[in-house]
Length: 168
Image 1: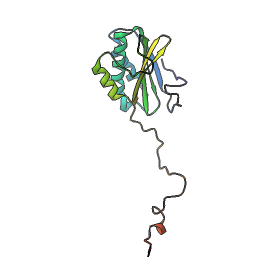
Image 2 (image 1 turned 30 degrees about the vertical axis):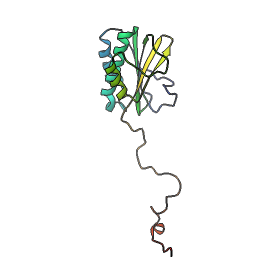
Image 3 (image 1 turned 180 degrees about the vertical axis):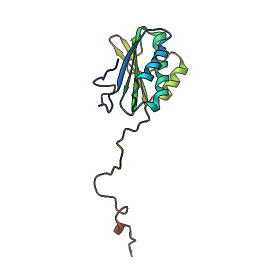
Image 4 (image 1 turned 45 degrees about the vertical axis):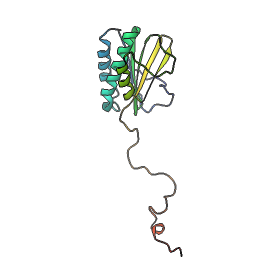
């Protein structure tokens, strides 16, 4: 199911509205289903360069939810042009809100931590949401020449400023 949330984690306005959510059953098939979900739903404009990293993070976080959570697992991907946020929600007891995401396996935690710009945990009415923010590789800048407004620095474009002066 695709949706466009009104806000995203961090509260700043979006530059891209691509977002999708899917509910997965808590089985050992869920990590593979999470990878397939990313393949199907990741923003086609900003996400292609990041797809391998997003697939890996989605798979690892969903596996953590399957191993330590209860009930269905909800995965979401949201694009804001320069980053993709992967969030996984399930019923689970968790550390304090705002804590850095720590997965059950230390190797998985290191892998996810090294790929993500930021990660964390948010408590919800149904349990908790684990989220990770990954770079897309998209610069998020308009194309074309840009010039700062205001006078040019002396010496760069003013031939008179670049002439040598006698200071004697």
